[in-house]
Image 1: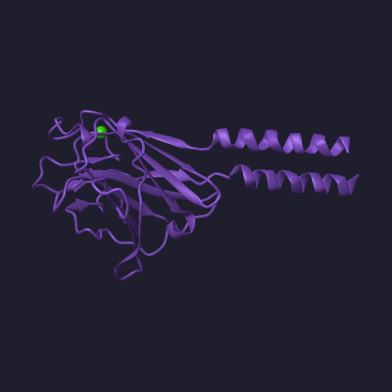
Image 2: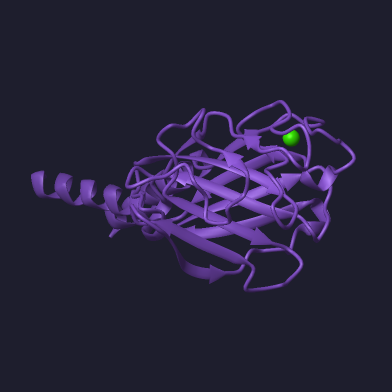
Length: 224
Ligand SMILES: [Ca+2]
């Protein structure tokens, strides 16, 4: 019995340290817009974390306005394109010839049903789902999205490439792109150009690490 308690404590310790290691914050320059009066469009940083099934993105801007649109571009390694399903004037391919195969287009002037998840099947873009972003931290200029790893097409230990852009309505370009520290467009009427995508590696979760640790203990017990 004493041994069993010690084992549980060990598992808990390993799990805790693994969770603390998870998550990556990607900083962007501020004041890098063609018009820096639009603080709601100025990306400050984006934090990415994951749990066992989902990847979470928190976008922090320098200000907040409900008319802001948030665009996410993903390359998770399957059929891809340099187009985007919102037909926004955005040059993805110059810096990322591999293009994208997943896209999220989202808005914050509605409390729910505000986040479209699009997937490219090699020929067409398809709207897979419309979910909700989390606007509970807009007082701190933060909005959060959670998407399933299954939808993204990634598993624990795998790396995917992505970019985040802010925009307005209609046919506006990406005004600020996380992927570059300088203005991505010269004005509302000009296409934006994405920089080289960022990489995120999906990390093992506390639950997964605990299972691995438990398996290791079971093996050592069998040897004993
Ligand atoms: Ca910025």
